[in-house]
Length: 507
Image 1 (cartoon, rainbow, N blue to C red):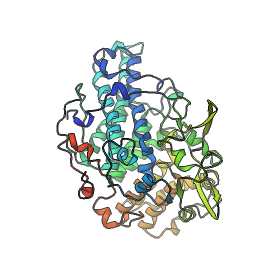
Image 2: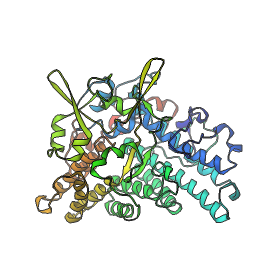
Image 3: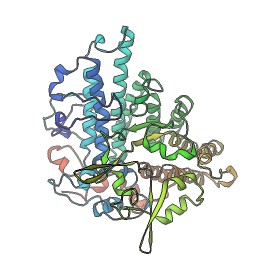
Image 4: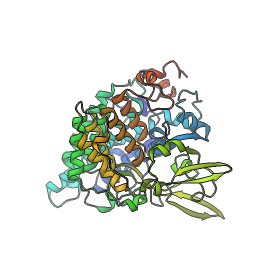
């Protein structure tokens, strides 16, 4: 499908930038304006592929979207102090916003433009990489040069598949564009495509990518912050779980666990996971180096919303306030190493405010007699504990659940946390097993952009809503998918509103 108006105002020469924690991501993408002349060398290809990852980071940093989509509208929270984000938490997603209010998080979260910017970069890479001669790539032989090209192609396809999977979880049906077009200014109709077709296109990209990548990247500094075969199979596992294709999900998980070379970190070292590139990390968005760290004053910073004194001395109480009741339910065993190492509280008057310290890798910078706080945590998208628990979900979701296999995977994670292991005899039926997996994911992946989607899959399997602001009747009508902002429909005449929100968000 041709590139259309969803990109009409995306001037990649302006928005494309790339700073990260290693030589690969430190490359500066070449301006789209010079496309015909800028694809001459391996370094050019490296820079352009780096742009795919950098633009995913930009999308996740828009209104803290990775965590706002994945964690905020869930049962984790008792209250949210910021009014805009409280509406996101309360699933009040249809509030009208002026088209000119480009800084309003409600607008940022309803436009998919940042993700399509990354898709456009993937399409650009795939198009031009295929045109470059073999000798342009690093390698002493033609075979090595072709392998180098294919590695770049695989990464571009991984990033495109990742963006489409992510958008499908947020919006459901989305436009599907997989062909590069140098003129993105034409304004024509670009309708939404059925989610099933979008996800199948992502699977097709990943099936290509897995042929061209090794399980672990040969450059240690690049590990986890750029795609390898383990990341490809992990993304496949999540796509299949979202589709409810749990047999395929389980097989993809097996590939990651058996061949990926990942290992759970020691239970005494949980904080190391969030500094980045730990032994169990599979795919991350690099954001821990000084050149890429985000000020905790920025709306894209998860630290701004979830930390408080002493980590951020200028914030007395956390903005996103954890529900003490939910925290008590998840961590009824307070000896759990996750609870001990990842949560704390601050007193304010007679109130006790709990908060999560996963993103407390904060550095201070003094400039012009002003102290600035920088958040230096990578965005951990996929890690091994997630895959153990996703395989447990696949075994629990079967018509004839494999209780032993599901419990064994749950217990791998619980054992690392130092808490009592589950026994099959204690789990009364399929629904109880599924709920046990979801609860363990809630403990292990707290504030890692996962809870919202876990609750969606749980409700699809059990028919019981665990959302605070989405009833089961509303769930069946698709309320859990986000609306698109009406501003996108001004120039895209073929675009229709997400069905549940059609009568609620019209301008």
